[in-house]
Image (tube, rainbow, N blue to C red; front, side, top):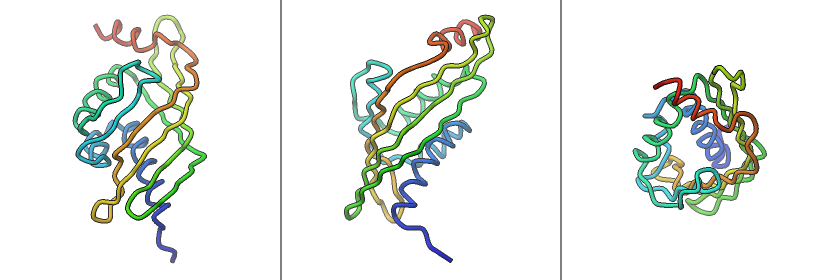
Length: 152
């Protein structure tokens, strides 16, 4: 039986981040981060990069994704570099948001890439830097606004 390499464990951590987000398992999402995280989603939100706690990250995602009926993240083309207890990860990422609404334009797709750094803390790889690089958005760009209006 082959045991997983550090590279395998690093990639698994990133994949679990996306799967647990899609499943809205916020406790498991929080556990994948270090105590403080350099968090940069400026390419999507325009908000400046900042240092956040896992709780702050999860609270924002939970609030933003709550109105949606389904979310789905797909990642691939992983490039991983490991030196000692630090790993850098680049990967492509696509996220679909789905919410049936009167317009019939029920989805929005984000296409881009991620740059992450993970630290090995007591044998577990944890994310301490998270940056999303948006290439483009397709579909109903007002989907979450439609979702908020529907929920109100």
